Image (cartoon, rainbow, N blue to C red):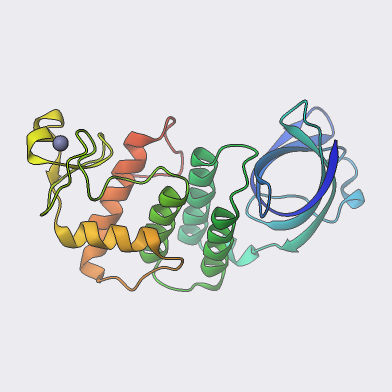
Length: 240
Ligand SMILES: [Zn+2]
């Protein structure tokens, strides 16, 4: 059993029994973990954070090894990011970000780059930096790349043939299709090379890119369809 300190962004929080809460959080060094905070609901003063979703905290936790539920013994609020809640569209996008992280990141595997991506994205949303779709498209594409869930952009998702010119986009099959595999998905649509290049550039960039506003709608649609088809569970925050 080890004791650790970490910075943690709360993804989800649930009441547990009469007095406690369990939560899922993403930490800077230990990846995504589940934690139990005893007595948080009845003795909130024992802790210096209420561990609300979308807040940044410093936690001390015991790694129990026998269970995936770690015991959190201390939590201090580092950044409440409260500005996110002042605008409904910003709050919705932030909720989408944490839901996608929860969906694609496995428990108890260090993911420092994903932690930094989520933290910087939430900070960007809190200060209102950049158009929301620009932040959204970058976050989703970069996260999918870092988590190993990214769409195929150079090779056919079915037969792995290198696709030289523009191919076809199939969210269902996992990205690009070559002409020979096009029949596998009747809903596949032609994908322009500029869309594919932009998606590739976004997946490699630590920050949002200045994108042509006319391209945003298509990029967002492609990524939203991809999330709809490729994740095991439908996202509650992905509205049509
Ligand atoms: Zn193919």
